[in-house]
Length: 77
Image 1 (cartoon, helix red, strand yellow):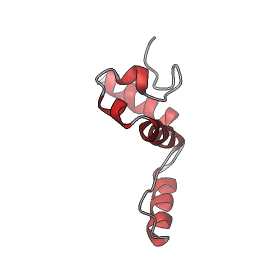
Image 2 (cartoon, one colour; image 1 turned 90 degrees about the horizontal axis):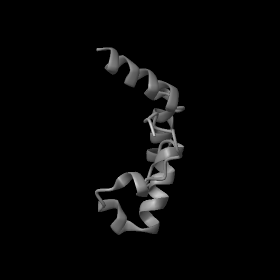
Image 3 (cartoon, one colour; image 1 turned 120 degrees about the vertical axis):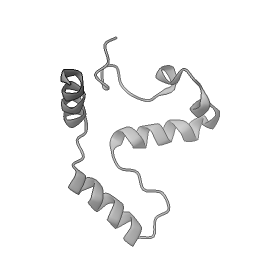
Image 4 (tube, one colour; image 1 turned 45 degrees about the vertical axis):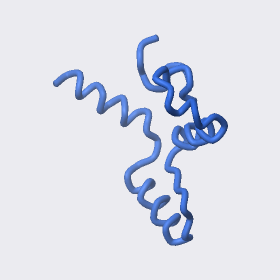
């Protein structure tokens, strides 16, 4: 249970977009008839990387492919 609480706290710390903020981004995108709606800088970076190299999105070794900065996910190096 302590590990789960730690994960929740880490997510809350690393997720700068609130639920209300995400809902606004999504609803504004739907109202504007956008077909691609990205919520958050992490997803925007991930999307950019996948578009640059779509085949890498299927690689098992995601850590070397993912656009996350060192320590961003709170995982010990």
